[in-house]
Image (cartoon, helix red, strand yellow):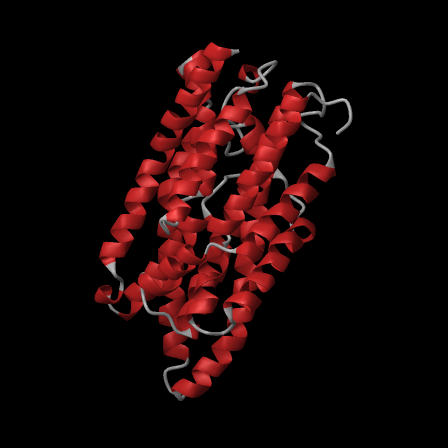
Length: 339
């Protein structure tokens, strides 16, 4: 990145720090079910998930999610010539993400990034800077819709898969069923990790593209591949480090899981993420897998889900975008007064 201003380099590094935190929080959701069912040890699970997070770069060639983040949330013109805009957006997102990861709350890092963009945009240009219903499923309207729909879709798909698989294998001995789904869960967890990589690494890439394009270093519509490689590598490293408190919350506290349930939850989550990524909608992997796990628990019995834990998770979701809007907006206002 020769010839690029130091403030831009600092902001790119900060974006990668966010990407890494994403790996430690959101990517932990990729392995929570496979750890909870004891198919893999935590160490083997994070290596498995990290590999498929990065492999998504070659499996999914669509970059629609990054396009949504770079030009489908706020008017890209608001960022032009303002090298502190993205910096403050990331600081707000990282602060809220760190606080929730510290206390084991599996929030959506995707939504911290979206809230982080909105805060400075409102401070600088007001509501007119926000994009709502853009073509090709871009805009805050679509994103808000799938904040609600993603966990519901995950829940319904997992519920249906759990009912179907239970009916198919009802006459088999439990040991044989567990052994079979331990093998199947390797495939389903790999699929979910691919879905996670195809969504979340692109979100950070979209922010970096917006930053560099606003300063004339890359083309907004034709960004270089090295940005994607960099983001996929860093999110994979975040997965390797792991967010162990989040793994415990998702894999153990929400509902007890067996290999069949883990397979159904991961498969439902993967289907949801593949679909939203193809549409260019930055859906939350956290919301999706949480809904899927709840669907598996509900298929057994409603009381199998620890609804008190689920309520705390939902509250963290509700607060995420408003909290990051406020944090990033205040940070940007302070910085704009100083420079």
